[in-house]
Length: 436
Image (cartoon, one colour):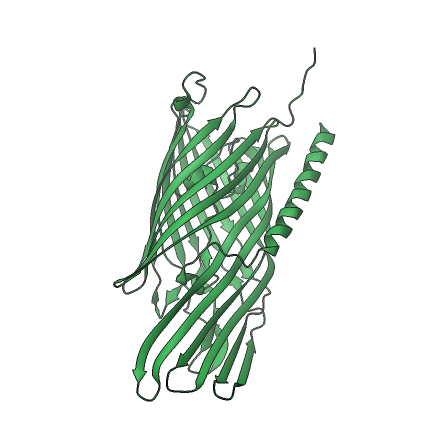
């Protein structure tokens, strides 16, 4: 048994190294195309898995040994001794951007995550995998007439990149109702943003390019308290805390003023030492389970971005520096439900299917031209479809659909329809075979 576990750990480490290297090489391929990704660290990624995307990403209080729930590392301790879990997911997005009478459609498919979970000793589970953190990806042009001296100004905005995390986590159940856990992740990635302006009358063009590269870590602690109410009902209370800290990254800003007649350029370069930072974050979740058929859960999270100073070019002082008030605290509230009529029914397949619904509301963590960015509302629904063969009936195909609307007064409205597919392999790797 011990040798089998060591072999598995070696395979896990090797697969993580290969996958991480491959993802790092494709770091410039963004999974978003939102103009709002030009603010902060970009669009913060949905870090839920296939099973709870149908529940609007709710999961801090969920505790199930047949699923990998990275939203709360304390849940890892629920995995049983015979199980090896792998979960991988992808999604397809269809988005409509609307501003005034102008409307633009876009679509993109992405590979989202891969995670795993297994038990190394009684009441102690270990997880690993790759998760997104943030995305930067946009390209658009604006044009406006200023005056007869300058003429019409054309501005082009472009950005790409994002941050990713490769994590290892552990969950321990020291006493029956209490579980604790930790996720430690290597955070890496980079982004490039540029803004170029030119006028029809003047001969100068101005370009600003912002860059940053991150190679650091994230740390998240989790707790779950599961209490049995009676024979048919139990409640789980969950909590998480994410450590805020400097990322030891040096964001830069290069300003190039070019005379388009002589092609002579004047360049000014700025760099801010250790200028990027993650905020402290807290989360709380509650889940109620009835007869192992119905689960209803709710989450609340708070990320204290309002305390983080953000690097920005100051037009007043003509310098690139850390400024307060550019970011704001981000809150998210979500609710979700999962219903399975009879998980052990072998005659009626539809009774073994999990039916899921959810909804969420999220406030922005950045400001746009001094006003709060768009608020986000979403609704979702999903199915957990059991996969069965002669020796395995525990793997599940999770399919979900989600509609997300981001809007604010006088800003671009973003309507996104996302289809997500996640495959959870639930294998009895450590089962003992008997030969007669």
